[in-house]
Length: 287
View 1: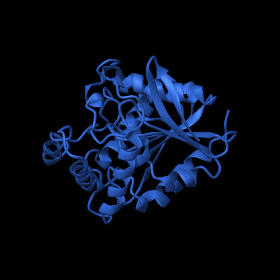
View 2: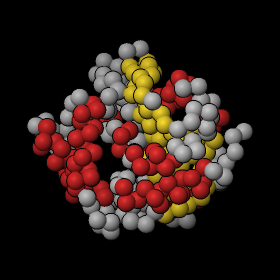
View 3: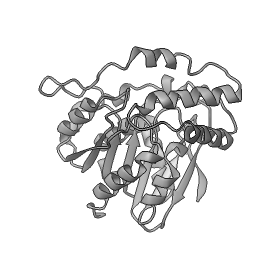
């Protein structure tokens, strides 16, 4: 089921739901600048056999409203959008799963709105800013300067085909070196996303959204919601040490490593990722 949910005056988000509507809900929160379609269909289908699985496009991505210049927002407002989607779908509490920026937003929900979460999963994301170091470990490791240099060109205007190829190259760099990279898989994904969005540019909105409200890392030590932390050992943006740090910070956490996974969700990792998610989620009973 597809629908649009109005989260602010003049701002509607594209939302898609799969699975039984009376089943426990799983809300998938994607990372920065990309559509919710990056969550693979195969993963959604695996989770939707016994759950109501919801994925959506953030503001200024995919088929959702692109209007940052007229309706600016903060990173925490993006997290609150997730709650607005649950409200619109009549979901009181959900298992919430976030990748990259989505994983940061999940952490903010853990400290700001724990009453809305049945469980949480954080994939490929650092701890909220402000989290203390543990045993000399740091919460962040610098990203490869070469990747930063590549990203400097992210928002440059390109023709459609050139944009697709730039995005495929970005996925290749994020993918890691262990699992074979299937360029055609990601090329087909980007063609689908462009058709879905009706445009091929990338918005600068998420880079401009005020992140200051996310600085609540010290509160993670008091979280009581069961949280799965998934380490992505081939991730060039979020080293495995970040996942260990976060897992040690959260009192009720479980750490799982998806071998070979980088900062992308190729079909090759879906079986392992689905197994980890279901193993975590299905131990929780709605309360």
